[in-house]
Amino acid sequence: MNLSTKLEVSKNRLNTFFPLRTKDERKELDWDSILGNVISEVYRKQLAVENLADFQALCEQELKQRLDDDAFWPVLNAMYFDSSDVLKIAPEFLLFRSEEAEDNKHNQRIGDMFVNLLGGKTLLNLSPMRLNFVEQILFDVLGNKALKPEAKMKKRVFKEQPYLPFLAQCFKDDLAFLGSKPRYLLDSFQDFLRLYGFLYTSQLAHNLVNWSEGEPKPCPNYLILDTEKASAERKQLKESGYQQLYNHVLRIFPYLTMAEMLQAGREEVRPLWLLADSIRNFDPATALLDDFAQNFKEERQLIKVQVKTQPDSISALRQVLQLSRDQFKTGNKDKDDINSNFAKATIKHLCADFIQQRGAAGSVLVMNQDYLLLLTNLVIGSNESLRLNELIKGFNQRGVFFDKQSQAEIVQFYERIGNVERMSDSGDAVYVRKTV
Image 1 (cartoon, rainbow, N blue to C red):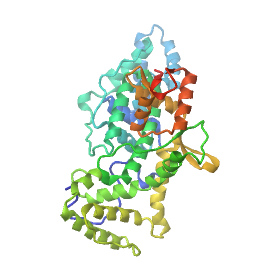
Image 2 (image 1 turned 60 degrees about the horizontal axis):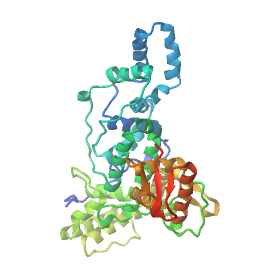
Image 3 (image 1 turned 45 degrees about the vertical axis):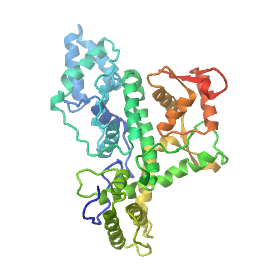
Image 4 (image 1 turned 180 degrees about the vertical axis):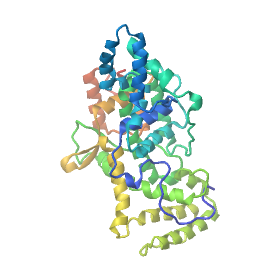
C-alpha cells in the first residue's frame, strides 16, 4: 500500500509529475533555457565555463594561434558571436541558452518534466554534424575546453517514474529519431519540446479523470488544422476539444497535491493511478481515507460538503479527490482563484501554441503546418513512409486526434507538398513520406 500509515491534512504542495506552481502565473517561460536544460541531460554534458563570453575568449585564443592574420578574428567574431550564430553550429551549443536566463527555477522544472519522460535514457551515440573548418574548431574548443569531464558531472537523481508510460515511450522513440538527424534536431528541437509540453499536459489532464482505470492510455484530444473552419456540427471537436481540455486541467493541481498529501513520508510519490491500484480491495485503506476525508472537511471548513462512509477503498479515494476540488469552491474569492489561475497559467504556458479563438465556435485546439510536419516525421521515424491509417494511429498514440474532415484536409496538405503517394482512394492505399 502506498498510502501513508498516518494520514494528516497539510498544505497543498505540488512537487511531482507537473512542473508549474501557483506562483508561476505571472512568469514567462524561456524555451531557449528549457532547451539548454534538456540538451544537458540528453548529451550528458555540462558547461565548465561560466558563460558564452568565456567560451568566446577561448575560441579567440585558439583561432588566433591558427590564423595567419590576427585581423581575421574580428570577422569570425562578427559571424559567429555578435550574431549568436555560434549557437546554431550543433545542438551541444544550446547548453549556453540555459545559462542566459536570470530567473531560471521555473524553466528548470519544465526541463525536468522532459528529462523525467526520458527516465534516465540518454542519447550517447548521436550522428555527427557536418561542419566547416572554422565550425569544427569551435566545436572542438567546446568539447575539449568548455565542457566538464563526465566524471565531474552531477548525477541526476530521478525521484519519480513517468506518470504517462505510453507518452514517455513515444518521447524516447521520437528523440532517438531526431538524434539520427542532428541538423533537423537543431532546427526543430524547441518545437519538439513545445509539442510534447502540450501533449504531456493534455494527456495528464485527461488521464486524471480516469485515475481508477489502471495504467494511463491515450485519450481523445481533437484538434483541427489552423487553416480549417471550426463548426458546431463537428461533434468530436466540440465534445473532446478545447473545453474538455480546460475542464480537465482544473483537476491537475487538486488531484496531484492530494496524491502527495496521501503519500507524505513515503520515499517515492507514486502516480495517482498506481496509488489507486495499491489500495484496491484493501479494506484498511477505506477507514483510513474516510477518517482523513472528515478531517480534511473540518480543516478546510467545507461546511456545505457532505462526507459519507464509503463501501470500498476506491470509493473512499474518489470522495477524498472530490474534496480536493471542493476546497477551491468555497465562495472565498482568493482561495477559489488559486486553482482557476493555476489552470489558466497551464493553458498559457504549455498549450497556447495549440489554441485559437474562432468567433462563435469559441476556443478550439489547432495544429499549424509546422507542427503537423514535425509530428508526421516523428511518427514515420526510421521508415521511409507509412500508410495513412498507420500514421493516424501514430498520431493517436501520442495524444493527437483528428476527425475525418481534418484527416481529408491533412491528405490534401500532404499532396500539395508532394510527400504522399496515393495508390487508390482508400486510406489503406495512401502512403505518406517524411520530409527529412
